Image (cartoon, rainbow, N blue to C red; front, side, top):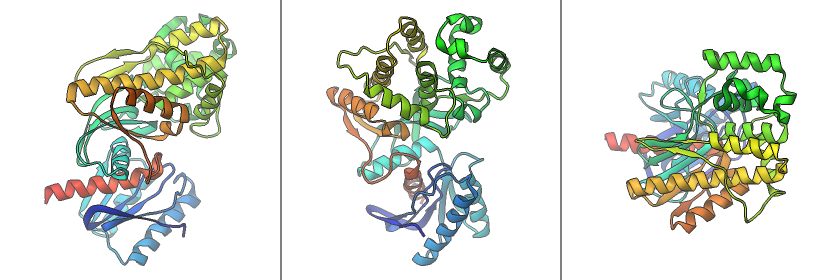
Length: 382
C-alpha cells in the first residue's frame, strides 16, 4: 500500500476514528489515542482503480493497526463515493457514532490542527467545489470556526453554473454566466474576443438555461471565478482537468507583476452574512479588454483584487467578532501570488495568519479535519 503518514498530536482521540476524506485528491485517515495515520493521496475516487485501492488501503491499515473504528467522519456531500462508502462501512460494521462534516469547515480545522490552534479563528476557505450546508456549491467561504463548530459569515456571490459539473471543464460557461448576470440581453453586444468567438446558438441555450434555472446549480466557488476570468482574458474555454485554467492564469499573472497595480472593484453587501459581489470587477475587466490592456496586466490585477477581497473580509470580521487569528485553506492558496499577496496584506493589518505546514492545503488534508471535528463533537457530547 502507499506510504502512511504518521502524525503525533497533543489531541487525545479516546475512541478510534476513521475519516473517509473527500472525492478528489482523496486521502483517508485513522485517528487513535495521540496519533493520526494518514493514507497516501489516491486521486479522484470516480476512477475505478482509485476506488478499489481506496477500499484496500482502508482495510489494510485497520488490520495492520488492529483497530476497529468506533466513530466515522465523512463529507457532507451525499453523492461523494467516499460518503456512500462511509455509510455502507458504518452499516456493515455496526458503527453508531458518525458525523457528516462540511467540506470547508474540514479545510479550516485541518489547518488549525497543523498549527496547534484551539480557540476561534477567521477561516478563509477558497477552492473549486464543496457541498454547502444550504445545498448549494460553496468555494469562496469566510467562516468563524473552532474545532467543534463553525458559522458561515461571508461568501462570494452565488452565480449559476450552467450545465452543472460540465462548467468545470468548459470555463466559458462561467464567463457566460457572469456576463448574463451583469449585462443580461446586452452581453453579446460587448464586442470583445470572448463574444466574437462564442458559439451564438450555444450561448442562447445557456442564456435560456440561466433564465429558467435549468441544470444551473448555484455556486460561490472562487475556483469558478478564476475559470470565468481565464476564459475572458486568455481564451481558455475548455480544460482537461479542474484548476487548469487557474494554473494558467497564475502563470500569466507572473508576467504582469507590477507593484503599482490597482485593484478592480468588488461590492460588499454587509449583514449577518456578508456577500462579496465581483460584478464591478467584470465590468472593469471588460473595459481593460476593450482598451487593449495586456492580458498579463489584467491577470495580475485580478490576483491583486482577490487578495484585497480576502483582506477586506477579514477586517469586517475582526471588527464584528474581535477575532484576530486568520486561517487560510483550500486549493486556491496553492496559487503562489494569491498566497503571498494575501499574507502580506493581512500581516500589514496586524492579523495573526496561519497556513498549512504538516497537512496538505488541498483536499488531501480534508480527512484530518474530519477526524479532529468528529473527536471534538463526540467529546463534547460525552
